[in-house]
Amino acid sequence: MRKIVYFKSEKFKPFLPNEVQVNPNVYGAELAFWLAEKLAEKGVVTSYPDYEDWGWYLNYTPTEEDEFLLCCSNEDGEANSWICFLQLEFGVLFWKRKSNMSKAKPLLDALKSILEESKEILDVEWKMKQI
Image (cartoon, rainbow, N blue to C red; front, side):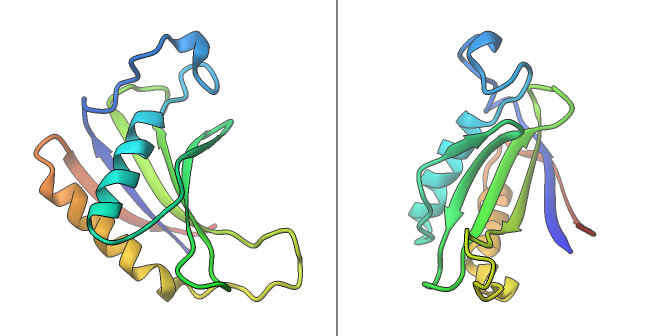
């Protein structure tokens, strides 16, 4: 199961033109950098944002054995509709122990708090989806 949050906000609209984005109509850099800063303020340390063809992510490593990705992107090419989800990072070595999702609770609790506290975040909806 994957924990996913959907929300609306005008705050993270890209300020650079579409042709310099990771992919056309794929946004999330502004959201990922904002989340990294807000999480750090709550004592949850992540990496600086990095990107994939689908959007942006933050690495969260609460222990040496546990690593997660907080993935962020716009939804359906929209510049005001956002999605974030937590994904286990299994690493390069196939024998690496599977991370325990409960280790990501501090990250998820902080994310929930950040989204609830920001007046610029609207229509927050949490879901669990099968992966």
